[in-house]
Length: 468
Image 1 (tube, rainbow, N blue to C red):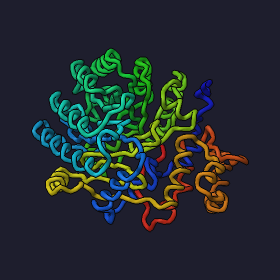
Image 2: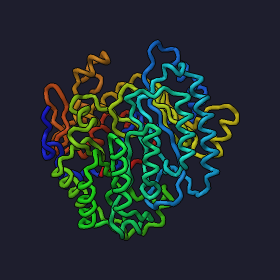
Image 3: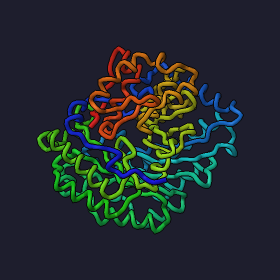
Image 4: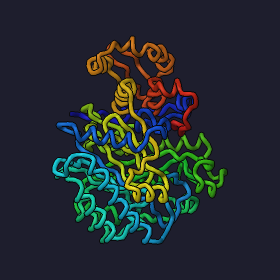
């Protein structure tokens, strides 16, 4: 199937972006994580796992393991992390992860039918682990799950902590995808965020991964970082494009020092002004487009032959807590502190601290902090928002056939809210579909918000990042 030229996929309209640059959910779930509540308990999670066990053909599994340890602090980071150089702490954590694997898997189907189609190690810095710790952790996982031959097995990489021997080990352990944190190659920016990382060490990791047969390389970038300039980020983009990664994630830096304490070390005057930040984004879109990358959505770009691009063209792209994915049919089990999982119509988030995590597992309890059980209305709206976020269009007839509703009746209030977006050029309301325009694609979160009943009716509004 021919690929639509990049210039026809997304258009940068500065006036439109300025008008709609509001705070909005990222919709890695619906309802969004701020709607989870602590009335959801361990007993509710056990019930969800038991319901999965009773299914004659349970969904395949995706597993996320949160590894929170970092040896140094990056000032921009708002992730749940623990700064340490003590490997005694990570060794203990792995022992408790094994206990959690055992506790959860005893509540679901037998290992022989626990088909694991996706596995992701995130953090923190997963490569903080020693080689022996990595072997031990993967051994625990394979003891409890059956990893399918075509499984996507991925890991987040900090090139400063990885050498060729580590990449070889990762390949031996079954990893076939890496996500490499770069953010920006500019020396002034790196100093401002306390992440000194040379281009040479970054490229050596990528070259080693390709030599070992890794099928996908993703590079993470951030626009809007302190001391970032148009010219400096242009050089970073050129260097990244020359490496030809399969995917590029271009994240928006949100300066929220009241929520992320490390950001208090960043001087506000060093953060680009909104108009400069927009110019940096516009430049990135232009350069990545000229290099042939497809705009997948939200912060993600991919080569036209990448699986994400194929899935989007075929209408099978999905979005979950790890971002865009090709596996819409998986239940997601999350292990470790702060992880968020999804089993059937249930979301669950783990406790955020090591002390709470260890205490729960010592008591043979699942380390549940909060969660949410979806209603039928939630599931219906999740399907609608998924279509918009992943395909940039919504076909009411498909929703009606799947859910047994009259779309215009059920979503009468939402239909009434769409004309202003159409007048501003974010969407087109066609006879058979609602289509996000090229100009509206960067603002798709704004369109999705129209169908978010919780956002409209909640007593308190969630705190979200800006759209751009």
